[in-house]
Amino acid sequence: MPQMAPIMWLPLFLLFSWLFLLSVIKISNIKNTNMNANVGQTNTPLSGNETGHMNWKW
Image (cartoon, rainbow, N blue to C red; front, side, top):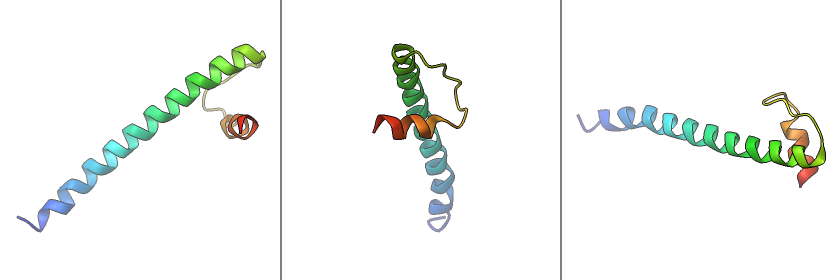
């Protein structure tokens, strides 16, 4: 049983990491929509120009 423990923990770790990444992406998406509302651009979520917005911000 002790050898089975890492194999059991790996899917849970991947699941929580994916949930964390999705939450971060959603939060950044909300910030992008607010910034685009101020600028006046139209924002389609997950359209591929998210990286363009990130490069333009930084």
